[in-house]
Image (cartoon, rainbow, N blue to C red; front, side, top):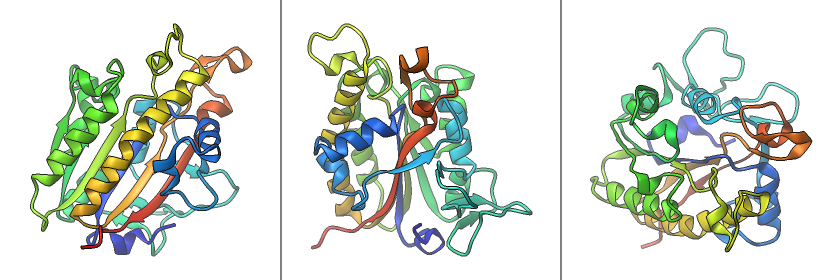
Length: 269
C-alpha cells in the first residue's frame, strides 16, 4: 500500500473508476498486451483482484467516498489508503490518510485540495436529485451526454475536459481529480463492428478503447507534477453467467474488481 499519509499534501491525487469493468476481462487483456497504457502503470503482477464494497455504481461510490475502496481478496484486516476519522477503526494505520470529515472529498478540500469530478454514468448526470448527490460533493463537477454511456467517444471527451480543467489551475494549487469512466458500462456494443448486443467481447473492446485515451491523460498530468493515482472498478457485470445479466446482484463476476495504486512521477524537464 502507498503511504498516503505522506503523499497527501505533497502530491496531486487522481482517482479513476472504470465503471462496470470485470476483473477477469481487465486481467485477460493485460496479459494479452491489449491495454498497453494501463499495463505500463501496473505492477509486474498485473491487476490486483479485490472485492467491491457495492454491486452497483451508487452503492460502491458512496463507500469509496467514505474511505472504503475495494478490499483485497485475501483474508485478514487490510489497511486502508484513505479513512474518515471514527472511533474503533481497525483498518487505519500510520500510512492511512485520515480525514476528520464526512467524506474523503471534503477531507481533501480541508487539506487545501481543489476537487474536480468528471462524471460518466447516470449517477453523476445532475439531471435528478439522486444524480446530483455524488457530484455535489465536489468543488466543481461536469456531466454532459458526450461524457456519458451513449457516446462512443466518451472517454476522449472526459480526458480532454480533465486536462483542460487541470491546466487552468495554478501549479501551486493541489488537485483531487476524479473520473468516472463510462465507456465500459452498457451499452458497449458500438465498440465492436456490426455488433447488435452487448457481450463479453464488446465489454473487452470498450476497455481497449478506454486504454487508448488514458495514455494521453497520464502524459498530460505528468507535465503538471507528480500524482498519487488509484484506478479501480466499482463493480463488474454478468453476461449470462449462472443465468444472470447485469449487476446489482451477488455473483463473483460482479464482486471481483481490478485495482491498482501507484505514483505517477512528474515528467523530467
